[in-house]
Length: 400
Image (cartoon, rainbow, N blue to C red; front, side, top):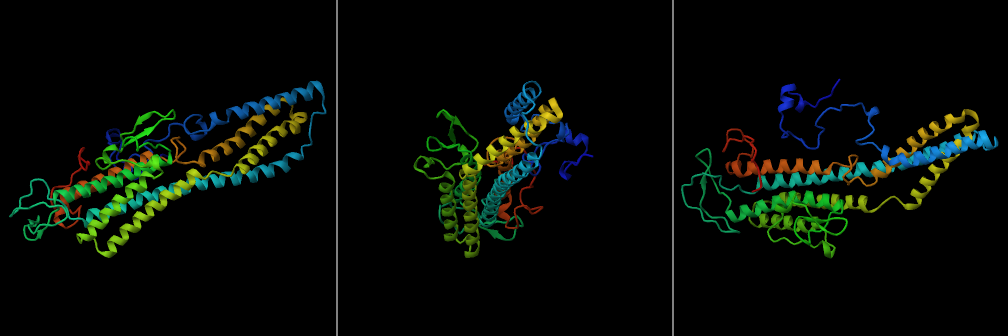
């Protein structure tokens, strides 16, 4: 029976017409599997990676069987050696796979910490920073817009009684710039973990393997005007952008937007973001010790090479497919562990960072749209019946 998530169960007709706008639309699985996993030999599998060692070991098994049957029947080893070696190989693979998956899972948790911190910072900023006047809002008096100061003029609230002070255009632009930077930090962390650097050359660009510029416009428009990265000097772009966010928090404190408790909480979230960024750097840059990798590879190869000598005399040519199956199983586990050691790539088995970033960006853009249209009421960004009706549309919440 198919296990369809609750937010997807709208009937067959709704499924066909559904737009990818629900929660976690990109990072969730879009459709049921057509084939059982036991019959899958292409997407997400490691078959192509283990094909070469399986073929080599099968050839070795065939040679051993041929020698045993046509040259000398003494080309054998006692079968009791197999259990002894299998214990060693089993322990080695369990340790290897467990430590590798721990790197994968820890990396996923740290990336979740990153997105959670950005969500919290965005929520704090959009709730506590005064909202701008929505389009078409009429005021009873003039409003002068001076950066760094709040004019005494006020707008009538949507209830027609209370008065609220809207944000100046300059401070609105500064707030918008900070929210854009928070979104951009998702992309910079992702690209940093994949070694897609090169913003120093041009904002939002990266380098290919041969050193050529490769356009990466996914976050170019999110960077401040005239922004210049310092990656060529050894400074990570994420850390550089964090200084902009902390500066804006300081501006908010000076304008009494944030009290001490709120500003401390926002700085704590910013520090948690940088800490998660640093922890993912450790996973990316600190590989498993090479001595352990060498011993693991050699032990696995030794075991698979000894198997034919212990089996050829008893089962003959059946030794070849049996050795191929054992090699496929053992080398498959080892290959999965090797993939999990660096979970920040673009393979299907890696963390789906692209989709997670896109989902987080959609969330923030919707919140930003509510702030720009409903925030002036002071009653909450998503209060029913307050301000401009909050109805989702294609261009709602864009960062233009």
